[in-house]
Figure 1: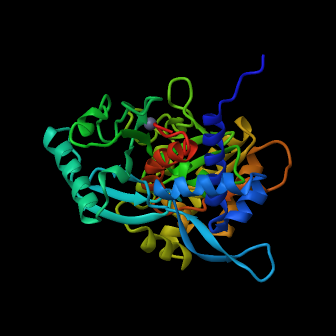
Figure 2: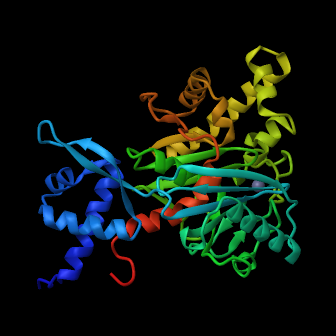
Length: 380
Ligand SMILES: [Zn+2]
């Protein structure tokens, strides 16, 4: 049965189409919009006037129009009409970031605040977030929400930590922060945040496994451009695949997990990655051997992933900034020794966003939500 579309719905749909078109094309004229979307000029003009009044778009100089020799008013997105805050809670520091509607970083700060499960800590973190907001003159109505990247698995609704042994925060809920903040709050499992960032900067990406090679090992599964956490929320927790039953103790309580072989913590301890890789690249024997062993273990993990899920594998996390094409070649060699069939070496990708991916990724769900619903705001 055909459903009836009301004039209000048509108007809202047009508004969203026009907003999306300007968002994608950055600076466009009324004529360009009308032509591209096959809408009448008066329809586009009325919608633009409304969106200008609402602060969603603004006039930004002129662009060449299709008509020869004539300039037309350019419209552009007010990219800070709304912003989102990303917060990464770590053992010794709290990182805070603000991103625009294009997911671009406006401001980033790192504060030394030791993690503890106390009311004082939750309040200090929230006071710091408020200070960050005030200092940067962000207005309450601008802020879509605050995403907290957690070193732990979180529930599908992003309200609770399911398993957070690194910071001993299992069971923590967003309420502990939300009670001090006026904005919606959400928890994001940290590698999933990094995967959101990767998706954001990779429009061509559909299905992939994201490997987070950071201080701790982690992963995320991307399918149809969605990050999938799984039935119980622990998809791609490669870090706890046991490789050596008598190996080193993992923070989970078991021995010889991938975490004990592939975390940056195990690879370089408290050393700065810059120093470690300087030594590796200049051929220092000890570091070069550690790195060779790391790549061998990483190759083993990649071979397992590759056999289970034949998709691109993104080498992400802090370590990805130091990976060279020659390392990727070593990885392919390792994998090819373990995989029984020959195939192209075309599935390992180095992350496009090695820096701030987790903090930005924690903010992005709010931006996505806003962009998906432009034109459908209350009262329209
Ligand atoms: Zn473990």
